[in-house]
Length: 420
Image (cartoon, rainbow, N blue to C red):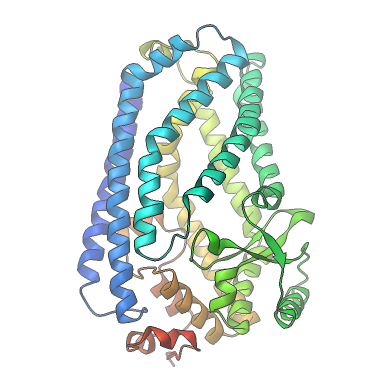
């Protein structure tokens, strides 16, 4: 049984790595050609960043692969021996917390390199060592309090109920929904949220929300720029906790009409029920995961020299859920891409196609999003359609922006050409 599990993990590693290699080769060749969508300078820079980040991803994949085999060869046995004095849910909490913390420490060098070297080199990261340490402490406290509580609760369910995987699924799914409801309050630990200072923009947004009957707890600006210069906006929370959040970087770069077009796209997700569809999809993934790991044979645990107890079942779920999610990703991503097209259509009807296209172009240029990708990489990893395809659906042929020579042109309204 262990051989089968290792074989599935190796297949996951090989496909993931192959897709990354294909993406690197594709982007390296594409960035040497004529610019598409982006200005020529941003096109090359975006290509360089994509190649660099994908190379780092390859390093991370190989590193994780080695760590995986260290764990199953002798690491798990050592950790099990060190926690022999604990039993039941206490054993599960100590063992799993230790496993997660050790993995985080081992992955820290790559995280630090990406944050303080790669992302700073390309003008994204504004992270400081002090802020990084503060974020780490806050995340660690949340994990030790709430994460340990979830592990303890799941451990009790496993040891107390015969068909535990059904109730375990219900428990974790309920936690997932609760986290989505409370997300704005958790995020407030890391970012400062303030009501919009631009009253004219505030009024326009409220009018837009009222036009589609969308109720929220408010419209807020987030000080995202203290960590990163990328542009974004989102609707956070569920039910009465729903709120509209605009990154301060987005407010700075986009015009009012472009901001309304972006929010119109997000409203499209809300009105089309995509939030609840995503929750349902996650429910399906969790149900599949719990069904598989709730019916593991004793042979697997014997081969790993572990007891078939709550701590080891939770451990197997953590170690082998990534391959399951990876091979479900093409289906999930295909559904997500379909929803994005529908949200674009909804947003362009609320505002104008010109405003949405201009907003997407500015987002792509400011975020240095390379517009071209290998089909296999899109198949597995793209939850959004490639920007070229999104713009085509909006009637944009891409000629205008490709001919722009000066990045400063993006500070005003982008002139775009539409297919007749």
